[in-house]
Picture 1: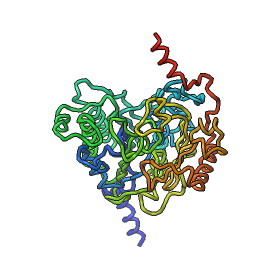
Picture 2: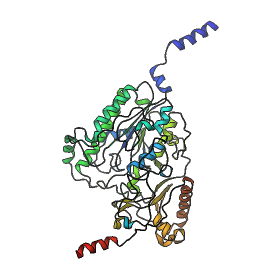
Picture 3: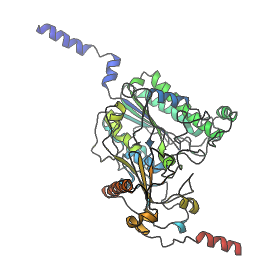
Picture 4: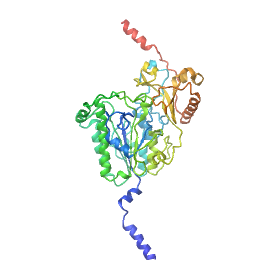
Amino acid sequence: MKPIVSLLAALVVVFPLPHHAQESQRPPNIVFIFADDLGWNDVGYNDEGDFIETPNLDQLAKEGMVFTQGYAAMGNCIPSRACLLSGKYTPRHDVYAVGDTSRGPKAQMRLVPIPNVNGLKGSYVTFADELKAAGYATGIFGKWHFADHPKELGFDVAPDAFPSKNKAVEDPKGIYSMTKAACEFMEQHKDKPFLLYVPHHAIHTPLQARKETLARFETKKADARGRSALYAASVYDLDDGIGQLMKKLKDLGLEKNTMVVFTSDNGATQQSSQEPLRGSKGGYYEGGIREPMIVRWPGITPPGSTCATPVINIDLFPTFLAAAKTTSKELLDGEALMPLLTGKGPLQRQAIFWHFPGYIDNPVNRGRELDVRTGFRSRPVTVIRKGGWKLHLFHEEWQLDGGREKLATNHAVELYHLSEDPGERHDLATTKTEKRDELLDDLLAWQKNTKAKLPSVPNPDYNPQAKEEKAKKKKNK
């Protein structure tokens, strides 16, 4: 029998496995598409009307799993991206805002904000670093938004930044040049696992669209959400670029062994109402942080499935590593989504968090009455989402107005039952006190565990009458 065994062994060595067998044995490619300022309602499969058209994202949703309660880790661009890439909450890296945590009328700030670190530094380990170490080719095509170059944070291929503006608008927001380069990257690296990160400039202001696309939407009836034809056209062109990327993936025969992830960096601007969700970009009500999110992974995610478990973009780092069958020595705040993607069980964690210890100007839709009156989108706040419940802890009232002892009157806490009140219209902090205290205890423990920096120093320049005094002086002149 020995000669026969030797002959069989030789055959295994001489003849390679069929292509489909090789594909099934190699780690999956990862294509991650990241929109800019795209709201939860700004995709066709979530929009109640027919004003917004996203046929390619709608198709992706039919082929994969839609997370109905997917979240950005922060309400603004740079901090959301810092959390995403590092897999860490803001207290771990101190990236809280775009530029400054002291944005808005200084005389209306009751506390001195915690200083901001303006972007993730190369000393942090990213999911690109880890996948590169695991043998993946890594490429980014699109918006970066940090001072340190992408190659310092794990990306092998990182062309110069694509333009966010194009006066000729044949290539609005660089959608088509980015997509073309991304497709070329896939073709060049089709024979080994790759991570392709495509963070779009679209649909961030100024809005742009191709002329023919704009004409398509100018003939439509007015949108119930107040979105303009240009807004809808910008979304449509973004979707068109995504469609080209998906077609290339299929043409290369890589579709079946590729995880495709789509989401957005933060909520929509006030050009698009997110009702019934409250608020918009920059705030920590649902409209500022809840995002469209899809994962399509053939053979893993059931086509046309949905998942209502709250997930957050820091979960993508450990999810990508789990897909690649590798691990990290890094402390990661996110949790791999594999149990949800495969339908084999719930996540282990009980809650997710947001921490913003500063100020952002310009009020949001249905923001806090105090913020609307004084000109802020958000004041210092920490937020917890646990099950169907969500609690906001406002640091000005907590630090300066009696803290826990005065919760009945100081308005330091807002509590909402999102399962019944997704629009955060009914504050239950003074009626559901047992649930309030449970979430508050969890939030305070999380702040301690992450060593979150808390604003506690009273602002010496605080002057709530400053606006009125300025108006009087101007009138007297």
